[in-house]
Amino acid sequence: MSTEKHRATAAAILPLVGGPDNIDSVTHCMTRLRIALRDRSLVRDEALRAVPGVLGTVEDDTYQIVLGPGTVARVTPEFEALVEEGRTAARAAAAPGSATGPRPAVTADELAAQGAALKEARKERNATPFKLLLRRIANVFVPLIPALIGCGIIAGLNGLLANLGWLPSVVPALAAIASGFMSLIAVFVGHNTAKEFGGTPVIGGAVAAIIVFPGVAKLTVFGTELRPGQGGVLGALAAALLAVYVEKWCRTWVPEALDVLVTPTLTVLVSGLATLYGLMFLAGEASAAIGTFADGLLSTGGAFAGLVLGGLFLPLVMLGLHQALIPIHTTLIEQSGHTVLLPILAMAGAGQVGAAIAVYCRLPRNGSLRATIKSALPAGFLGIGEPLIYGVSLPLGRPFVTACVGGAAGGAFVGLFNQLGVSFGSTAIGPSGWALFPLLDGTSGLGTTVAIYAGGLLVGYLAGFAATYFFGFTQQMLTDLDTGPDPTPPAPATPTDPADPADPAKTPALT
Image 1 (spheres, rainbow, N blue to C red):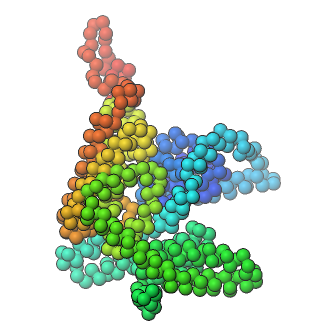
Image 2 (image 1 turned 60 degrees about the vertical axis):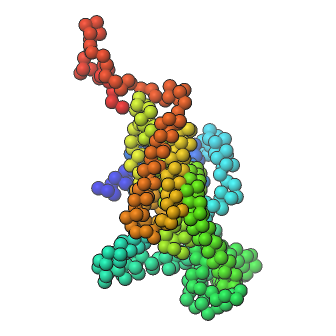
Image 3 (image 1 turned 30 degrees about the vertical axis):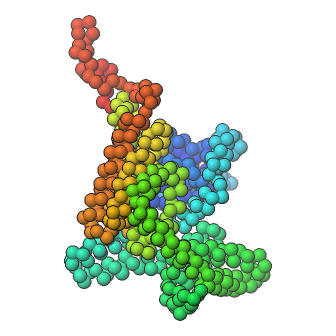
């Protein structure tokens, strides 16, 4: 039944994005189905957002449909299968002797003319070299998030069992399961980096594997002995990126007959030597600097740092640039077992939830917007903010700013406790909101950690609500937006104005 439901969702989405012929590629991340379109003007945005299960849409370098965690991983293969089926059917219909024959084609020029200005403006805003680089780096790490979440939760469970003294024979097994992926994450980063930047993925993984090889401890570089894992994911990223450029350079002069032997050998050799005698040391220093900076930032200026980080995170999410922080989170997890930044950044989602509830209260007659908020709030509580951002606060303008105020207040609350010496973080990246509770880990015990994080969420909800309720609307906005049937009961019927309770037209609508 579940498969039928996900296939139905995919079948409803496909015609609204222009059908199989309008799709170049299909991928997905934690929450979004990402579609590379041939013609953006064929997409029916309003109808798409009305499909059951669709939480919102985002237009970036790809067209992104927000479906939520878990759901997107099940809908995507069904969507891909429908795309392939549609293309197969089109080829069969166009084949010689077909009963129906080929259907008249719509030229791209005719359809693209309507949306050309919008598309070009969007590309100009988002195709800066810096933003493109950040997106590509994010694409390296996004496929790793499910494993990070799974291993992080297992690590948290293992820590709980160890602290309670329960199941001592199981604790070592859980430790091995939770740590195995993290011990080899550099290899996966190298593989994905080469794939993303146009190299051979397995060569990128082979070069990055040098970083975690125990034998590097026998080498001395710049007067210090190398450590296995030194440089971590940053070193793996740099090593694999270097390998991509070396591989491409080799292919410019190596004869085709010798390519299979010479190119991989030179790529691994040159990149490997550069990794051992330079990149590992430099990346190790950079990783240590990130850890020192994060700890110092929160221990000395935690409240202010939390205010800034929590207040600015929603704009990063809006721009899709929040994933560029993944390498920093991963580096911190490698060093200390958790990232202290994620619980603070999660407060932005709390501010967004509080703002959405305030909008719901301030617009009692706007049934359409209230319905959107009711459907998006459960996802918001679990840390999935895109439906509320793109469906509620951002289109309204001022509530987006007041949502950031709520995030800043929650971030300041959590940052203050870091400043007071109660340091904690998340053992994995990806979830936020209530979904982050199973991943929390700190130096002051699970109870204290959970209480502080919950307090931060509450502060974010209340501050986002209050800021939006009192400052999120101008009088003109309320006049324009709060439209619909009067939610108060009608006056009692009089002989001159009979009211029939059975008549829907004379019964107040529930909003």
